[in-house]
Structures are given as structure tokens and as C-alpha cells.
Image 1 (cartoon, rainbow, N blue to C red):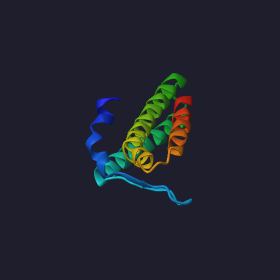
Image 2 (spheres, helix red, strand yellow):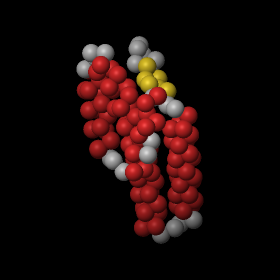
Image 3 (cartoon, rainbow, N blue to C red):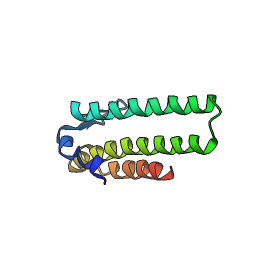
Image 4 (cartoon, rainbow, N blue to C red):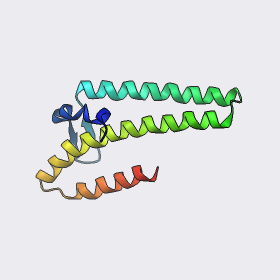
Length: 115
């Protein structure tokens, strides 16, 4: 994975997921959570910008390029989350003998690869 994703690598030691029952949750260290929120705020701004471009009848190719950049930014957020999930939640569940988590993660990766 890119350096962008790898920089959070050591931060995932404290990440944990609760998978019991239907109330599934995760806990990310504050530094990771703040990083993700900052990225998502930027993406939110990009979306508003794209909307503005369309409202101003901006040349289609320029709008498409902005959409592509936004998709890339979202993929980056997904990679960070996936890395943390695999290094903490998935490993923990496998250590507990819950191998169904592998099927879950494979479905998630398939969904990401469709895009």
C-alpha cells in the first residue's frame, strides 16, 4: 500500500472492533479518526465543488476529472480503514477461532474492487 496508508500502520495496534450481536462497532485511535475525518471533510468539499461546477455549466471533462480525484480520495479512506480492520479486527477474530470473518472481508474487498 502507499506511504499515505502505511503512515498509520503503527496506529492500528489500538484499533478494535466489537462484533457481538447486531450492534457492530469499531474504535479507532484518535489520531486515525481525526485523519479520516479530515480526509472526509476534504472530500465533502470536493463534492460541493463538483456540484458548483455542474451548476456553472463547466466543461464536462473538467467535471469528470474532479469526480475522478474525489473517487481516488474516497478509495484512500477505504484503504486506511481496510488496513486497520485487517490488522486488528480480522486478526483478533481469527485468533478467537472465528474464521467466518474471512468470508466477510472477502465480500468487502470484492465490493471495493467493483469500483
